[in-house]
Length: 217
Image 1 (cartoon, rainbow, N blue to C red):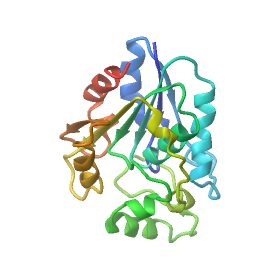
Image 2 (image 1 turned 180 degrees about the vertical axis):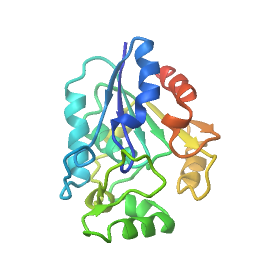
Image 3 (image 1 turned 90 degrees about the vertical axis):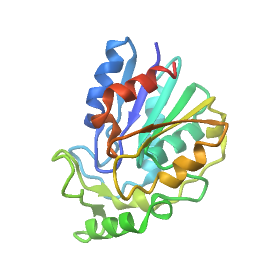
Image 4 (image 1 turned 60 degrees about the vertical axis):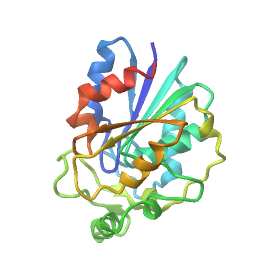
């Protein structure tokens, strides 16, 4: 039995993993689905990337045995920071069409001009929160802008995690992750998978994703 800690992408909460979480629970595994600070019912416009990394570290600290961290999109930033702080019990890192930062990088520095423009447009209301794009699930919440802008502080200890997996979603236009996927696909430290679906892998391809995750334990 392993514990899967599922970290959603921007604007989303733990509900985004509902389908794949049910599949993993049916196979006897423990699941922790995170709704990061400010992305639930209580806004937190002052939250930054450190706040969200601390959210994940707290959950890791409560887990025993093998832990598999799974991060979607923005969640890759959170996952990397948490694994850098607490790598000992983590068996695998699984990035779902996600950012994989180096020290000093941020979502803002890593993403494409298209998404920077979306962040600016989304934050025009109060300058603190980025409103969700109109095509997303109605449960999405405004995302604290500081989490997109803050540079990550890493020691490099996250690389001690023995298994590093990248799952690319290659069925949508304008992805800022294609170059990253191509680079990791030839890196011997990484295992990569390509799925022909839109960005939100957990909701669009839950069975395929569950199979990839179960292979990590």
